[in-house]
Length: 145
Image (cartoon, rainbow, N blue to C red; front, side, top):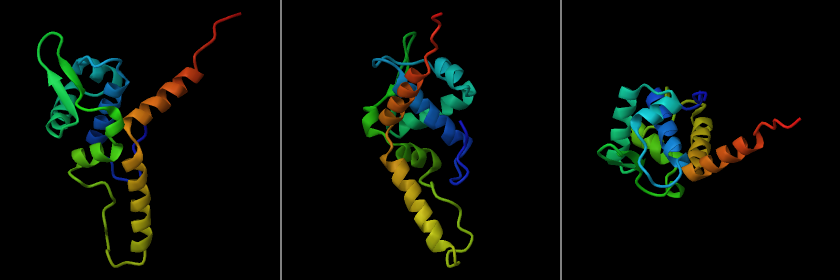
C-alpha cells in the first residue's frame, strides 16, 4: 500500500489504518491477537502494540485479556471513518504543512485540503472492507481445465 504523497501520512498512521481495516475484515466479533494482525499486515509487533493501545484509548478498539484475548473494534465499522482514525493518530493534523499562509497558492491548497477531508471523512472502514472483498472475489483463480 503506497503512502499518500499529497497528505503527509506517517508510517504510524498507515499502520493504524491497516490494523483497523484488518479488524474490520475479521469475521464475527472475536478478539484478534496482536501477533496475527502484525503478521498479516507486516507491521512490527512492538510498534503495533503501541498503535493499538492508542486506538483503544481513543475509543476505536477494545481488548480482552487471556489466552483467547486480543483486540476488536469497539463500535461498528460503519461508524468509523478513515478521517477519524487519521486525526486520532496524527493528533488532529491531516492537512499539509503551510509555508506561507498569505501566499498565492493558499486558496488552491485550501480547496485540496477540503477535497481530501471530504473523502476521508465519508469513507468508513465498512466501505473499505466491502470494496476489498469485492476485489478479491473478482480475482479468484479458476483451476478448471
